[in-house]
Image 1 (cartoon, rainbow, N blue to C red):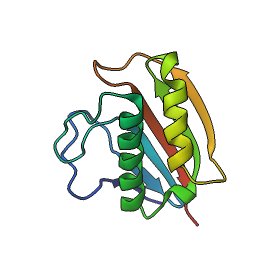
Image 2: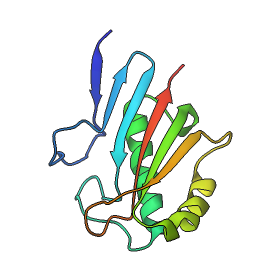
Image 3: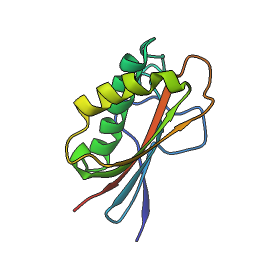
Image 4: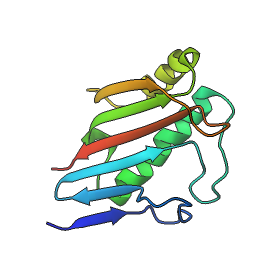
Length: 126
C-alpha cells in the first residue's frame, strides 16, 4: 500500500520538509496546521478565535485534497501557546467541528511569534 503525499491545490510550497497530509489506505494524517493563508503564507488573525477558524479551514483543505471531510476525523490535537486561550479556541471549535466530536488532546506549547494555535488531525476514510 503506497504512502501518498497530500497537498491542497493552490497552496504555496512549505518552507519546511514535511507534507501537509499523508494518506496510506484509508488513513489520512494531517500535519499540524497553523493560521497561515495557504496561498500567501501570511498570518491570518490576531485573536485566538480568528486563528482557530483559519487553522480549521486549513485542515478542511487538506482533508478535501485527501478525499475526506471533517466527518471522517477521529482525532484532533490542539496546541495552544497560552492557557488563557482555551475558552476562545473551544468556542470556535464547538461551532465548526461536527458532532459527534472527534477525540481531542489539548496541550500548551511554544510556537513561533504570532502563532496562538496549531492543530493536527487524523481521519479514517470509508
